[in-house]
Length: 228
Image 1 (cartoon, helix red, strand yellow):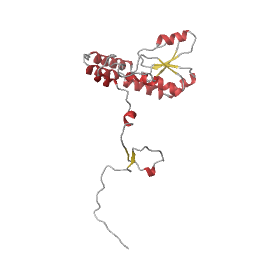
Image 2 (image 1 turned 180 degrees about the vertical axis):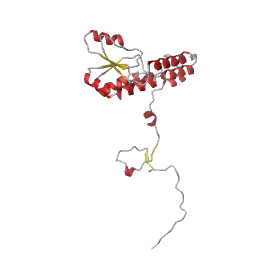
Image 3 (image 1 turned 135 degrees about the vertical axis):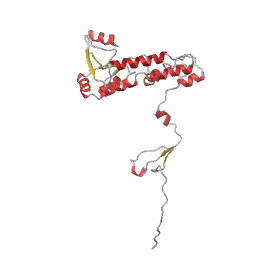
Image 4 (image 1 turned 60 degrees about the vertical axis):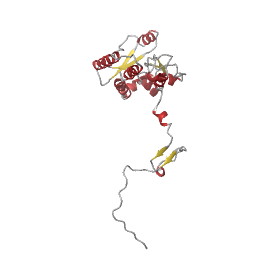
């Protein structure tokens, strides 16, 4: 991405490059304006984490399908902590977000593998241009609505080919969200009291059972009956 934005700057475009203070890949350039934001980790921490994760991935024997899947899971865990810190560092920094708003960008160029750029573009209502190879779990395919039959289009990092057996095809079907899983419920027992909720539609498989409690009520020690 760095040579692209520098060439845009050489052609007379105003280019603002936004990256964390502890970045390993980006830095100042004569052709662009840089805007850094603080993060709560150091460059040394980032380098050490990457080296440790890379050594773990390279030490795995991927001669079996199970080992390949294990390598894929570990590869997804390389930068989650730093991605979260980057996102919080920019989006929660009022000064940095105010500066980005003042620039009034025409477009944002970002790699959605780290979602901070995509989220910032959505917040600023700026058209996004994504530059990526592929995204874990095929999110890029889903977001772009590209056809990707699981029978012969392997997910990234699975090391599968376009000829998969039944077990490999099952592993290849990872495009499931919690919403999709919950949508398959046969029956919903709604434990709240509908009398105190806002009116709203419900589906035929939703049953109101009232506000139940976790403990059974204890029997009364003595009952008095008054009759007139």
